[in-house]
Amino acid sequence: MFRMSWDPVQFITWKDMSVIASPNGDSRGPDKKEFDPQSLSTKPVLVSSQRRARKVEGGIFFPKPENAVTIALSSRVLFRTETEQKVFEQRGVEEYIQYQVEHENEPFTPGPAFSFVKALEEVNTRLRELYPESEELFDIVLVTYNHATVGVRLINTINHHNLFIERFCMTGGSSPIGYLKAWQTNLYLSADAEKVREALAEGIAAATMFMSDKLTEVSEKQLRVAFDGDAVLFSDESERIFKSHGLDGFFQHERDNEDILLDRGPLKDFLASLGKLQKKFYAKGHRLDCPIRTYLVTARSAASSGIRALKTLRAWGLETDEALFLAGAPKGPMLEKIRPHIYFDDQMFHVEGAAEMGTVAAHVPYGIAQKHQQQKSSNSGK
Image (cartoon, rainbow, N blue to C red):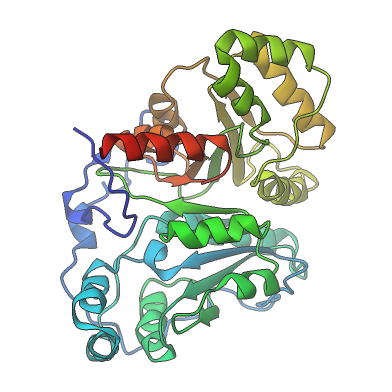
């Protein structure tokens, strides 16, 4: 039976994950090697002393924050750091720092955001080919509470995995929220739910990441991002109606307000940022093979309540490549077919269902559903 820890830093071990074969053949050819979970063993692997070659020759390495789509990630979602976290909790900060220094030539293994970051870099490669001088790129910032001394191991790990991450914020235990605003962050991903709520309160799109107990293989050539609708792309207005008036009241409310736009949700601007980059590919004739693909995966039903969602997106000048109106059906099986690099939802029930099917899911703690989840959790503990 699937279990997800409410402590997001307690990720399942990679060596215990199973990989699901691709049903649509889009990310695996006849000669492609099967993904081997053992290749991500937690056994120490020494970092090569040879510095990696730069992946980009010429062009702009460091786009200005106002031009880039900035993705800020904590080190605990990009890499697996459970062992180090235990050292910190059990022995204190001084021994934790010493431990990191002693192991700084042992790279961390990939965490839940790793494949997402690799997909962002693939998009950047394509953008640089089409627009060599453009600063409209994904810019990845690593945000960590770590002391600067630990940065050596993080840099070694980034070079070991050949990631193009040059911007760091090592806050030494201080809150990173002010730095996120300075970077004009478009999306913040963290294992710390409290810091995610702080970011959302400051108007920064943010989500808490979780790891499932099995790993679905994702595309290496196309970034796929899936969104829930209410309380993610849209406000929680309709969710509030459903909670207070039931399903019939919700349907009536949607019919009465079909031509009234929904208010924006916390990740609306991030979808807009993805759409802006998509249009750069469309302008060069790459709509059909665009390396970014977006999905709306909502519990709304199409005829009864879906039209308002679609009209709202259209009025905003936004679109998703695919829209799935599930009318209350489980989202996990649909996400298993989509194989997104990340899926955003405001309800832990759906996050757990997605993770159970092998999807890397992220929780957006926003809206009325959070109060109901807290009440349910409180009652279950009595």
